[in-house]
Every structure is written in structure tokens, then in C-alpha cells.
Amino acid sequence: MGGQAMKVFYNYSIDCELPPEGIFGGPESMDYGEKSVRGFVETMDELGVLQGASLFVYPDVALKQRALFREMAEAGVEIALHLNGLRYSKAPKPAWLGSMTFEEQLVLYKMAKADIEDVTGKPCSGYRACYSSANHFTFPALEEAGFEWTSTSTAGNYWPEKHVRWAGGWRFPYHPSRKNKLVPGDMKLYEMPIQRSVYSHFNNDPNRFLDVRAETPPDIAGPDGSALRQVGQLWTAA
Image (cartoon, rainbow, N blue to C red; front, side, top):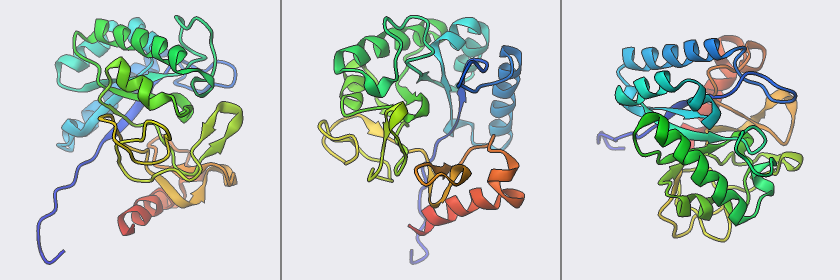
């Protein structure tokens, strides 16, 4: 870079979900989830990077833990929406988000956004889909609902039974196309892809590339987190 200073923008986040049920994982209890939230925020604050932290919260979690997320919002922590179409109590027709029409998604996004804003007392501008379940209607529906940025895409992942189809997706932050979620376009909405490996896979599944998660089990993260560090090195090199 010729010795020139380079400004780096980043976002580090955790998903705040309901306790496990059926095929869905999550914190072992609501109390454990609160401990995770507080631990994450305290760690980011100690490192001096709290301004780059976000909490992606299920609307039902926010409604159950109003005091916690109001406190976090008032402390300056961004509270964004995390949504699973099969785990939202207000969903008229529970389904994977990536299976829904534009209108069906728009209804859910507006309701869930209102739930978060009711809890925090602040605008909710960020969004992440659980399991990255999405389709070509997703980004336009989110923009219509009033979101400004998202962190949903997982380039390379292909999990059709959950309506996760990101094979061939753009790997860097971008303004999406209105017609094709995989490529840049002219939308105001800004997508920050979840950082993923180019070569390493989750549980050796060729359709699921490894992403950087603090909760990744040691046997997957590798000795001293070597597999996760490889993800970062590959992206830095790119």
C-alpha cells in the first residue's frame, strides 16, 4: 500500500435466538442467552471496538427480554433484527423465509421491525436472516420495509431444503441487484456478507463453507482456532 494508512470498516455480531427446539439450536436457556449478550458486549467494550458490535435479535427474544435490550440500545449497542420464519410467533404462515413471496416477506419484516423498535425505542435499520434463508424478493422487501443494511448472504452455501441458495454469490460488501440477490446492483440497501472460507467446510459438507463464529466448536475451529484464522487470512489475501 506504499506506506499509506488504510481505514478498515468491520462489523462483529452475535445472533440472539430462542432456546433449542426441534431442529433449531440456540442458547440453553433465556438466562444463558442474556449472559452471552452481556459477555459479548463487555468484551467488545474492553477491546475498544464496541462501535463495531451488533446484536441480531429474534423479535420474540426482544419481547421476552425487554429490559436487557432496552439497556443495550441506550448504551449505544446496535440492536438489529434476526428473523426465522419458522420461529416467529406472529408469522401468519410459518415457513422458511426463502420460500415466501415479496408480499409475505414484507409483512413479516414490517411486524418484526416494529417489535424491535417497540422494545428499544430506537430505529431498527439492520437485518439478518436465520440460516441465510432468502430469495430474489428478499432484498427489495427489506428495503421497502425500511431497512438500510443487512448481513444475510453466505456466498457459496447451497442448502435448498432450507431455501438457502448462495452458490456463486458476491463475497464482498455490496449494494444488491433488485433482480438477483447474488450480484451487485443499484439498491440503496447495503449487504455485508457473513465472512466465510473459500475452501474450508463445516463438518466436511461441500455445500456449507465455514464461517467465522465465536461459538464454533473446537473440533471444527481447529487447534487454537487455526481453521477460523485461515478464513481471515484467505479474505485478507483476496
